[in-house]
Image (cartoon, rainbow, N blue to C red; front, side, top):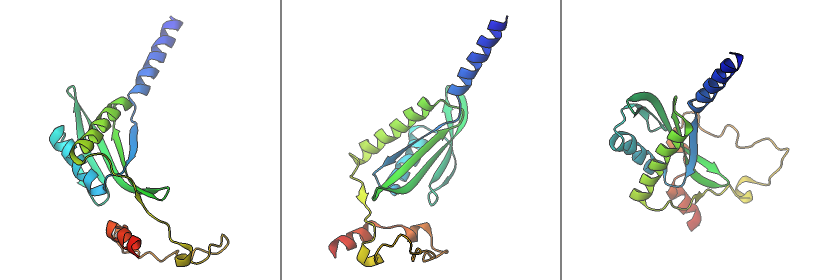
Length: 172
């Protein structure tokens, strides 16, 4: 009897761990607006999931995930990130109560849709750090001279480096 209880507890633990809420994320090199448009079409049109809430400016999308008659909530975040002086778009997907492989399958389908509609992913854009002549000599002990320079009322769009800004710097 004791072995049966232990075996039952072990099986329940294994099942609970495979259906926990997990998330998957990946950095892509398509533009943020391209990924956003494709993701919305993928969720609503291609899969027929109901979009519960979306906000392009903050980069999130909440939807109802339906599979085999079961409905659960899902979320998709699309964020611009800079990593190793390169610009990427990070997509993070979370399907509550679903095993991680379901998120992986859905994510792979979204990535395949991006490739089919927009071609091979472009090379990540380089975001050059300010040169020493622009920012002055680097001194590890000096206070950050740029601290507080950001306008607190500026929108995320105003703070974003655009492709035109990058091209202007390359032309000079």
